Image 1 (cartoon, helix red, strand yellow):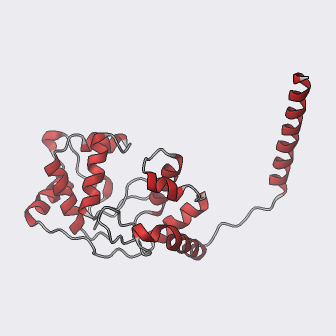
Image 2 (image 1 turned 90 degrees about the vertical axis):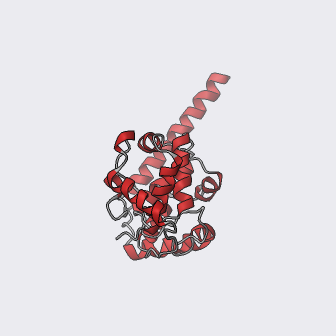
Image 3 (image 1 turned 90 degrees about the horizontal axis):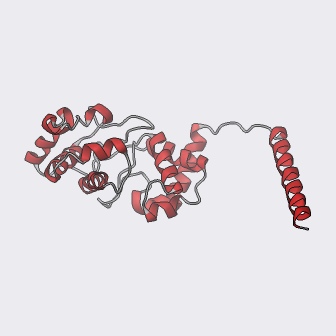
Length: 216
């Protein structure tokens, strides 16, 4: 009896799979959304899901939450994907990204990338910022810490899909991210190795300098 039931289930599964495949082949391909459509969809999602923490224009009013305006679109989409899959741990963001489709993530990335970054964060300690500028541009050779500019650009604008925009980011958020990388709470082999060789005062200096950058 079990063998018969198993055979029936397999037959039904095969039929459904075949039907789905044939339907997919027959369905006409949909045109990729235009930039205007991506922006409209991204703004819609941002207004419903992201606005409380990141602002509708991507400028967070809370220093613990990152500014997203001007962030490379591919980078935002990738991080949302990591949150949704659980590869990047954050209970709030996992919940927020749970119902986002791949196209939703692309739309949000495009929308926030097109927003103009504003100077809501700024360097407050000149001496600390100057120390941070040295690290950002030249690294810490004695600790084998490379220059931040090598990956994030001289102006802090980031590199699409790989490295985030840093210019004008809140000190609290940047410092927290560096500490999380160093502690292994946030997974990224490169950043874990770099931040693991930095002292907290050096992290604070870099965060201070970055807050005062204005990028491109």
